[in-house]
Length: 282
Image 1 (tube, rainbow, N blue to C red):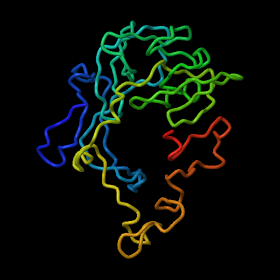
Image 2: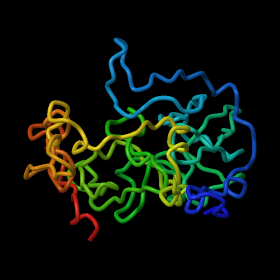
Image 3: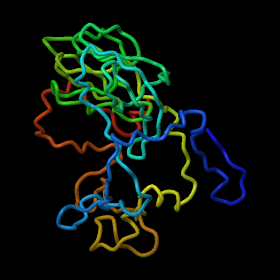
Image 4: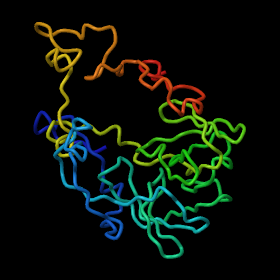
């Protein structure tokens, strides 16, 4: 991690990633970039649907490949680049047929590394194959939930999932949330763990840096009035006055509570629920 001299109070504990050492320094590949207008957490009607979003620096979207539909064609990593829309680093992969695509990079993969997508690919870092052919105990990332639907699980910096069992056409995968879930053997996954594992050590340091990232302030419920939040009201500094924490809309939130919809369609695929609160630390 990169630290700074404490020239100000906010600078004292601020840290950043040493990008000069981690990235290749290449400019983004323009054919795979497109404009992305910030919506500030608002929907088509202009109503806020995701709070605490807005402002921030302008960003161009990199078209990252999550489908990996080029089978049995070796690819070589040309660059290691920063992506403003995700915590993981991305790399420009040049396939042997001449096509270039952005992919999420696993640990230890750098410029010049190669990978291949195929049912009979070797069990090496970055290669991609069906879950049914991945042995128990292997770390995987970029996991599909439905065959040929594209990777949607384990894509953040430093995360990985583990194949813990195979049974009746399903692979049991332990996800980063500690949940163990059944996923079809026909779904594909990449071998290894996502890179940039030091991302969680970054200290923002000051409010302004959060605003640069497009993150707006969060107000505590206890600091609001009763009309605005279930935790609001009271003279002076008060506790929430409730046995269980609630969201602004009265739903259970955090603090070790179960917030999953009781009759969710995917409950049948969950072998072991995720651990929450203090239990998860163990």
